[in-house]
Image: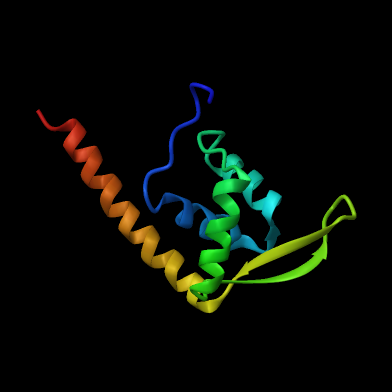
Length: 110
């Protein structure tokens, strides 16, 4: 792990996946790349973490999936947010904003 990368906190992966899919459907590798891009390389999500999370989120009704063709002409499973997933993105975003503000305040306290 490079010095720029960080470990994911509990619950962070779901929010990052929801956020990555907020602009449109992506296949698994595309989700991983998008997370790395939006976190400026801080989080690199490996398949062993990503795919179980995608499966769990699909089971929860936050995502749905379909088979399609990737940019390199290979068969790939694409994921998109459902209405419930968009709602969950809002809920989790608000929760993380509260947590990050609380942590910022705690770290600034004298």
